Image (cartoon, rainbow, N blue to C red):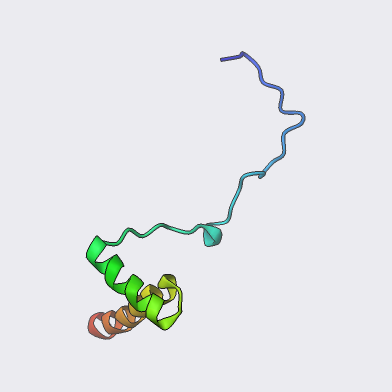
Length: 67
């Protein structure tokens, strides 16, 4: 490692991404992925849309249960 580094040409925040822009990968079991992928193909919609719809409905149920 060098004793000194030259940061005179450095660009602050060059690789910064706000947390809202990050996409968190979700890993589905093979059976779940296969089932919902098939449904997405039949309905001509993206798999993400199906999974998000299901998770939103689950959120509503949990909100009612947990309060």
